[in-house]
Image 1 (cartoon, rainbow, N blue to C red):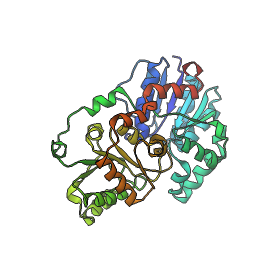
Image 2 (tube, one colour):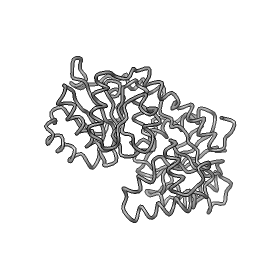
Image 3 (cartoon, rainbow, N blue to C red):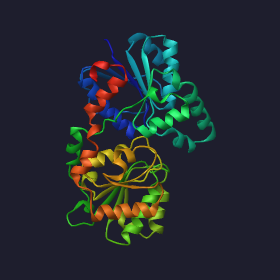
Image 4 (cartoon, helix red, strand yellow):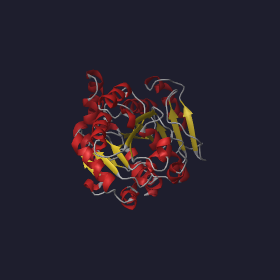
Amino acid sequence: MKIDLAIFAATSGHSGVDRVLRNLVPEIARLGLRVDVLGIDGHGPHFDALPDGMRHLRLGARHVYTALPALVRYLRRTRPQALLTDKDRVNRTALCAQRLARTATRLYFRQGTTVSVDLASRGLTDRWVQSWSMRTLYRLADGLLVPSHGAADDLAAFAGVAREAIRVVPSPIVTPELSAKAAEPIDHPWAAAGQPPLILGVGELSERKDFATLLHAFAQVRACRPCRLMILGEGRRRVALEKLAVDLGVAADVALPGFCPNPYPWMAKAAVFALTSRWEGMPVVLIEALALGTPSVACDCPSGPREVLDGGRHGALAPVGDIAAVAAGLLRQLDTPTPAAVSRAAVQGYTAEASARAYLAALGFGEFQ
């Protein structure tokens, strides 16, 4: 069977990249291309159902590097027109496989985050390896794709590649299923009528997401008016965040229920959505919240929130880590929320179909422009 596009990914199963691929791949298949998603055992992405023209193939390895022989065999046997990969380790492995396979498959790397800030938080060895990889190998790919202009500028400067070699492609986030999932009922006392307004955060409980800043800001807001804070996600910072809520005296009004496979009813219910990340590439959850009409506050981190919120016209922007500014933004949205129509209009360019067509154009399938 002739395959147009192969996608090689190894994700956590519940990240923003997972949601991007779960929306992107079926949409590309619906446009008429045959797509193979190549996976690593024990890793995502996971798909609820496979549309016609799409296959999800496991390479029979539990690590990206040990998947190299299987990836070489796949490229030699199947010879897809293009191969799209995501994240640096996967990108390196794919480049090696392409060279060993000696096929005409075009190779495109995707970087979903702001690399200079991301690598600054890594250990010395990891930082050195990825820096060398980006500065040496990325120029050998047929193209580089990123989700925001800020991420593109950063990658060009960091990797020393020409800015025009990097394509900014909007992420496929807004789907018809989003509204349907948001309409599902919530069985929780905080969702009942007449409860205090809810501030919502969604994401991994990690240093990068910086929910400590959100907790501090919430404590300032809670001192002024009744409200509650819920953070949906799991991660290594859970114990520290729970202790911080106690220390700030707001534990009774803070909930950390863990990872939620369907956060969208909470997004639609929330009075304000808050993103306090230290860095991103393009924050998926912010776009999802805006698509549901939820007033939002975001830290002006590199990269994405400023572009999505149009410099603050579609929601409040605060400097990264600025507790007082985040609290002021939350209070402003609670008192005078951004109209739902304005929030939705801010993310109309992130529909699944628009993104799929942009991806295909960037991947050399020019007939879909």
